[in-house]
Amino acid sequence: MTDDSKIQDWPAIVGELERLLKLRSIPFGMKMFERREDMEAISRIRRPSAVHTLDQVVGQASRLGWTVGITADDLVGAQCRAVVGLGSAKSDAWRSGQHMTGVWFSTQEDAAAHQAAMNCVPDGRYEALAVGPLSTGKLDPPDIALFYATPGAMIYFINGLQWAGYKRFDWSVVGESACADSWGRALTRREPSLSIPCFAERRYGGVLDDEMLMATPPEHLLKAIEGMKALSKNGFRYPFPQYGVQQDVRAGMAVSYAPS
Image (cartoon, rainbow, N blue to C red; front, side, top):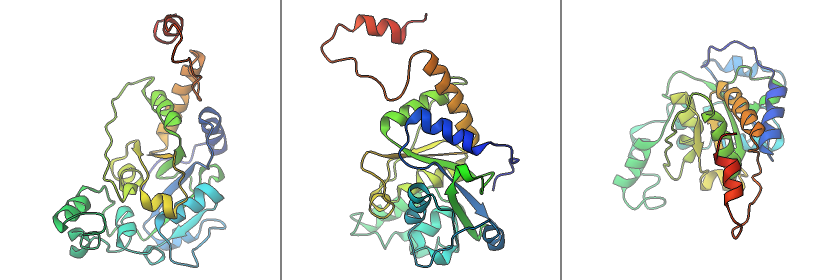
């Protein structure tokens, strides 16, 4: 998907990200392949021996450090396939939302509206997908980079993105199938995409209760890291030290919000 050249020192980038955000899981990447053979040519790539959700494959990369390659046949159903555009997932039955009616949504109209709201890679172009740790460089260049972190770490990362060339971010919440808000949105819109992981990600992907997911084109990692380093020099570092709910706030505010 990406045409970027292979120029990144991924171990160094990941090390900086882990140091600045105190990450508890492994930053990872996703790369789409038009030909299955190109995915399978990745050195020592793992191929599933069982049917999985994509959440599980992501968990294998972010929790176990595996580089895993999949095709549509490795995924449990159309919902996982549709978000990354593998196979011919987006049938009329899928768009109708009938498989979610009465389970996640009250009516089929509600379920169909949910399906229409999802950010999904179009069907037909890609045969395979690889997911794995960024630090190995096996996916260089990845189409998108992803990491799980606490809400506090996420706002610090966003502050880093906004340090130079400020931009307001507006993100979506589709509810269940929140992978459409993270990797689906980042793959299709090529923008940083923050999500609140859904039930399936937490039940099958091992996502912890206090974790959110950031998915972004990889160049934004470099921008955020430079921004967080600048904020650190100004005394803003994660985790944020508590000031106290009963203290006189004027001394703290003078440091945090007034220019030196």
